[in-house]
Length: 138
Image (cartoon, rainbow, N blue to C red):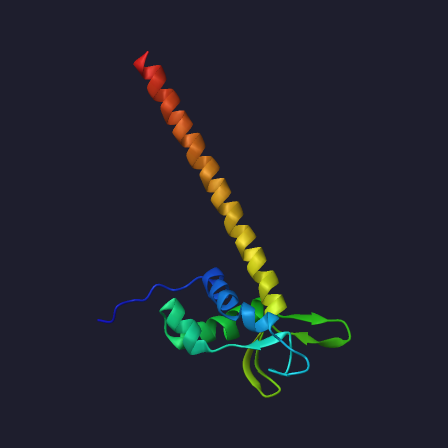
């Protein structure tokens, strides 16, 4: 029976891509034309999958079928803004880095809200338990 791999969250996938490709994004040079577009950064799914310790198709499927559908949007009288595209000119498998960064910031904010709420609930429980123990001991 195969061992089940832990499935990375959207936050983990995007954090990994951000960490691995942020320097590529900011290193764009209009004159050198290291890639077709500043906005769309090519990503190596094998590198990302290895970093996350999952199968390459998990990362591709997560980006192409799930996250792209969630976060791509239509603009009035303009082309659709995609989170992930299969090609941007000669560059293959590209992520819209500014859009991904916005999505990542939102996911981090949601995680922080959850952690703060959990921490407050745990603290309230702990204070209540100490208060109960003190009242019983009196």
